[in-house]
Amino acid sequence: MSKHEDIIKYILSLEVGHKISVRGIASDLGVSDGTAYRAIKDCETLGIVSTIPRVGTVRIEKVEKKSIDTLTYAAVVNIVEGSILGGKEGIHKTLNKFVIGAMTIDAMQRYIYPGCLLIVGNREEAQELALNNESAVLISGGFTCSDRIKKLANEKCLPIISSSYDTFTIATMINKAISESLIKKDIILVEDIMIQDPVSLKTDTTIKEWKQIIVEKKHERYPVVDDENKVVGVVTMKDMPIDASPEDTVGKIMSKNPITVTPKTTVAYTAHIMSWEGIEITPVVDNKKLVGIVTRRDVIKALQYASRQPQVSDTLEDMILKSFSYEIEDGKVHYTGNITPQMIDNIGTASWSSLNMLISTLGLAGLRQKNNINISMDSIMTYFMKPVQVDSSIHIYVNVIDVGRNFCKVEVDMFNSNKDQIAKSMLSARVIKK
Image 1 (cartoon, rainbow, N blue to C red):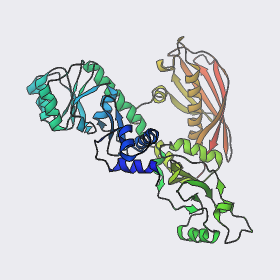
Image 2: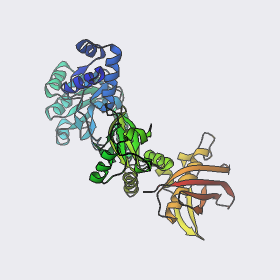
Image 3: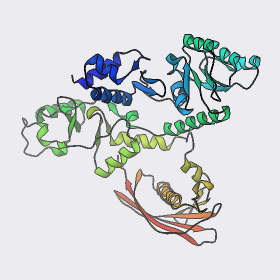
Image 4: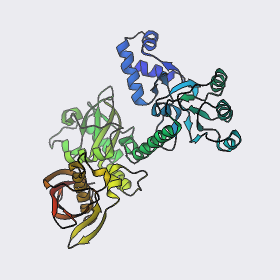
């Protein structure tokens, strides 16, 4: 086992909440500061340590799947640019909701319960009430708290956070963070769909042994790894020469330097790469070591599932497209909508990038509307584009010119309310096959 792996194993053995430093790790394990630093950074990527401003790096419980319904107090510290006055041991607990303490103590009592975060000013009685009800406290306006409150927070293992922002600004910042997390919820990652602990072959595995595995597992495609479980190739039945001997090894016939993805790669990107390169399986690696595989069928299923889900929170693109409706006219898909304020550039007209986004997005949407296929953008050519004012009504016509086995071609024309042509584009989309 390497020094790097020794450090990670050592950090995993530490209790949750234990503070970690580069010098401390280097001293305890007798390694260089550089080696300790790289290992700690990898642990941060793995999600077993976290760096909190004004606190340091601490060991945390690994969260296998992020939940957007809950937020940790550590995340709140980063969001509001706050400092921790007490209760550091509870910084990685999750909060269920936040409450603004703008009422009397008696009225506040009914709203505070375990797992809350009370946003309040320099009101010591409210701070004490929250802690006694197992609720953390966020003090606005840059105020501090008494030593008695700090002691109570340490005993309860509930953090007291101080931020220089006012209560309204803090509430707005937290709401924005939750909204952004909701958008991220819709992004499917490779780790959500990958097959973990896949069957793999060694470079010295013989073709005879490989054929036996094919009979047992009913699969033809396998990643090839070395003695350290690092991916060095991929082998499929297409790679097998006609005159191959049963004693030949897969290391001789495998495709070397295969395309790989990480658990945090998006499924949409993976689908595009697999379609572009014409590959059926992609190894999933973490520090070059095999942790799973994804197949083209898994990727397509995930994209189809995502397309059927309601949007949890609106992205900029969603807000722009909300005002558009469509109908079919003479074999073309006709979209009608308005130029929204989000699309305006610094001179007061619709920006080139927003109009191109409209053309490409509605072009693909029109193609999917007329042909029930899985596609991804390949290229776009915009021949001309004229300025358009805010609130202008526009009409976009999507004409599918050709649908082939691998590519589709779409012509997109944009007009204003006076039927003057604003833009013309031609886009090409790649068909993603199962």
